[in-house]
Length: 309
Image 1 (cartoon, one colour):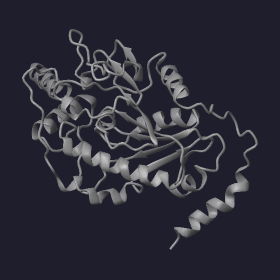
Image 2 (cartoon, rainbow, N blue to C red):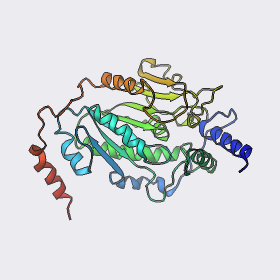
Image 3 (spheres, rainbow, N blue to C red):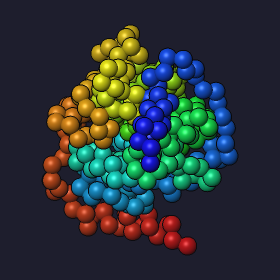
Image 4 (tube, rainbow, N blue to C red):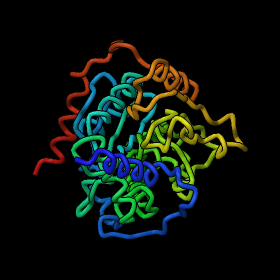
């Protein structure tokens, strides 16, 4: 392997994905069958569900208990990064449900005919693959059609949640999922804020920003994260400029690193915990506090029975 050529390819991928180029222009919409709105019909089948006390649960159990389990503070829809759902979605969901939130994690890339935004078998390969996808212009977060389609999935999940509970809803995302979150502009009164893990907004992605800054947002970002376009000399671009009219609504956790992993830095989880506590007055329920699962078993059993052929 030619090390110099490999380094050049990775640097090019960083420019394309991270947006450090000063000559780039916003990408135009590129449609694909995978982005058809009809595919939202499968989003709940492509999702994993979590509840406080229980952790990961099946859909019927979630729907039966989200409004009955005491101490549920809200619902968080968490969106994965360019590679689809991996272990980090579980890690982030665990943080949320231990803080008292129900969580739904839809997987976008398993829409029929879809592809990941960063194919590869290692971080280096995925970074290069993400650059290749960006050049192709379809299966990339740079393509507004991709984030619009992810927004369609979110919209359908929100519609379903609203049939179950009036609890506040928060949108969350890691990497491409963060871009999905800040691309959201569909104005639902039950959506109360956004959470962006380890991503930036920069020249090549600025055209995707649609977030209503009257809604609060928590953001984590690492200065030298290549996935966020960060280098030692040119740190990743945060959201301060976007929130210049509402600076009180942005809470940013910035760290001088490059891991790209969510909730791994000292103080990061505490920062998010404090932000969540400011958004929701109801404190997290610690322990069962008298909740007896057997009392609600008939409700869960009935929900399962209704879905049995």
